[in-house]
Image 1 (cartoon, helix red, strand yellow):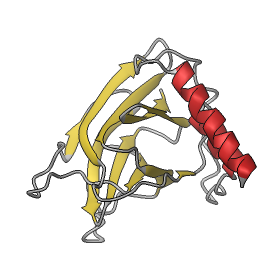
Image 2 (cartoon, rainbow, N blue to C red):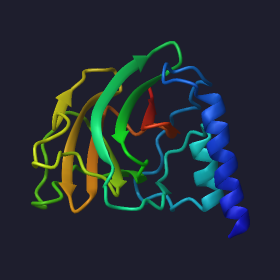
Image 3 (tube, rainbow, N blue to C red):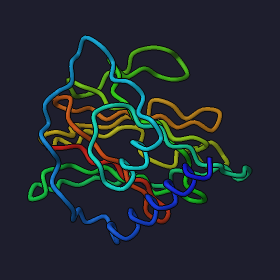
Length: 197
């Protein structure tokens, strides 16, 4: 357990050192060959998750847990996005008020509304789901804190949709043109996801 904590702490320091801002500097993504669609990739062990948080590119699921004392529940207060064509990726950023929540990032067959269980229509041929927990995407009155969906029209990152905001779990799905490598990073008050483009 002590080794895991030490590895995660080292990865967090590397992330902060390597990412002074979210302007997109860094190494270009690796080959974006799609994984086999006949079976889901296995959940990475903690060492892979630590590597991913320090800038590694993967296509398999990534789960990172943060122990967050609630209340208050962290709130996603803004969603930003940008193309970084010179560096070979598109980026989406989740600005968070309060402690950074944990997250689970993985490809899903289609976007599903958390509250309804019904499919959600959105642009894209492939879908990358980001689940933040504990987190809300609404204020204390229940009003949405961020736009619920947006068509972006980037070559790879076509759109996003908030498909869930219930019981301190926020689910956001990215509509992509294909299955590509992604990476997740943390900076003070924000979590970003890059998708190879």
